[in-house]
Length: 482
Image (cartoon, rainbow, N blue to C red; front, side):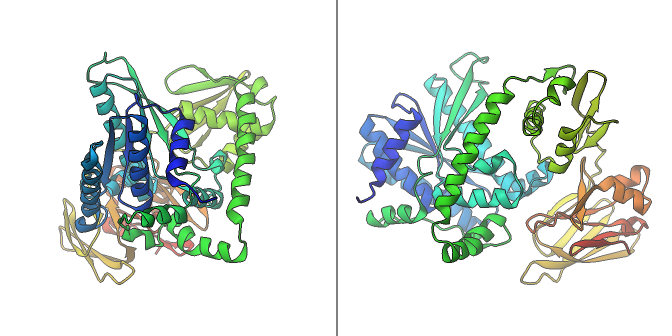
């Protein structure tokens, strides 16, 4: 039987529980996936008697303006063209500031891809709040264009990253509760945003076939070919190899996902019987007898649960968490900004991070140029095809300090809370590196740090020689301290 793309999207909308009286929004980028989503949503919504679709397109300001803003203008025109037959599609373009994604990546310590996603979803939720307040409603559906190929790539990526329960991949829907702060309803009312993915069971080939059959064009993101990103490496290098050596691997992967989902449901049902108790500011406790009386898999689940209660949104080292789950900590254990302690009755978990005093060194370096700071001038030169360049920092008293081998884009900055460096597969706090270099007191905030943004290497240099100390430099898998 020939695949009916439009019917598949309609069936998905019905399965999610969307009805024409609930506002429908969509995040559209201009690529094939999102264009097919917009076209099919417009057909489905119109046939169901809906009045309008609200589209949001985000210009991340990562690529050249002719590309990124060009994509946004393309989406705007597509919405206008689709509205010409009487069905209204409004379109909001959200333009981020240049460097906003990179700075957010540094602040959140999760890379540029995650930072772009964080800012994108913030824009989506702002749109949902506006739409809900205008309509005076408490529910909004927000459609996203993830497809079956994205699902397979995500499952492979999470496996390679050693992820835990996130091996279940992309969910077809999830709910987010937002607080309304303005509009036609009382401020203490909340909004439920239901993110839906109608294309999650449709592959990229079917998407392109659908668009070609209707002579609809789409935009192509040039960064999709940039294999500095793990997802692009998987898509462009690993997936073709898997297709060659193991046809049908995606079906096996999805079957494994279904089994993992059932395991997660079982663990969730058990975990619900055990509750963490709040016992102070950002502190939770649970009875040791209960916690260490269950299977270790349940203990790990409970620890992940308390991370959520503490709004801990960074990745926590599995080995460290597993050690806590194995046995009662004999002394206070501090990892990743959390402190685990125990007394005769309870296991306690609390936030322990202390904010460092940050000096004024901060710049996102994207190109060869001269950059000025209170302490001196940074000259970036010699960039090659791979973006690797040479740095020279000239202090105000005229002394020159050199460092070669930084890959664009990178951040030249002061230390930040919870900074860590990695060498030989091991992680250690930046504070320990500063200790080993002999940097003390306020000078710790003045030592420049060089952190690559897209290479996956993170902090590659602690440039102590600028202040008369030794340097810590990451070299391949190890590090050197000249």
